[in-house]
Length: 222
Image (cartoon, rainbow, N blue to C red; front, side, top):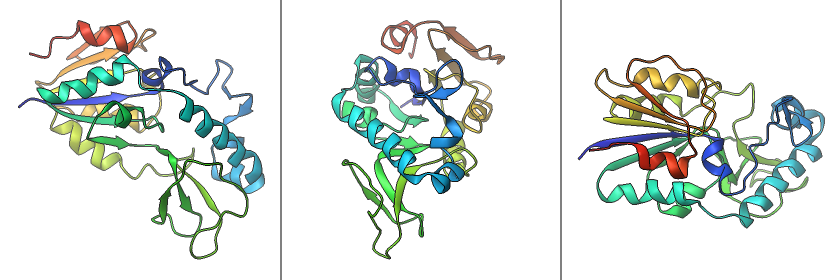
């Protein structure tokens, strides 16, 4: 059975109505990214950071997987499918995908500021005073700018095993995730699906300048 590996980014979920957060001027919902997505921002204004993610969590509860998510889930009938996503939403899982690796964390999880391995499911607002079992403040289980991306070695191993690599809805500008394309085998077919694809030089790459929902139907997986 062919192993299909998917690298998905914010554009994958945009069709579900989720905003991609970052505007053309670099702001996230009107905030400087370092104010709401960095350890320094959390230290200086934790209330602002928690409310930023509370708003993201509420929005996620209101949207559903789109046809692109569903298409990928349906491929599991014929392929081994591994999804490596930069997205912090759960839309791949809700569509039915069984193997999803979240490089940058998950919006519906929180973790202790004392012990990063103390992670719990969380779908409500997270507020100052919500504490872990050891009495320390909880924070979003999100990889912020300036923090290590601990799952990159796992993702690289998955990409090394790919027979086909699909890159969907990502700018290919955020590292280390963008570097995963360099781990595939020499014979691996690579498809890059995005309505505004970045310039990526790779000998095995086919670019499909469309949204996920339509672009996925243009690839030949046989």
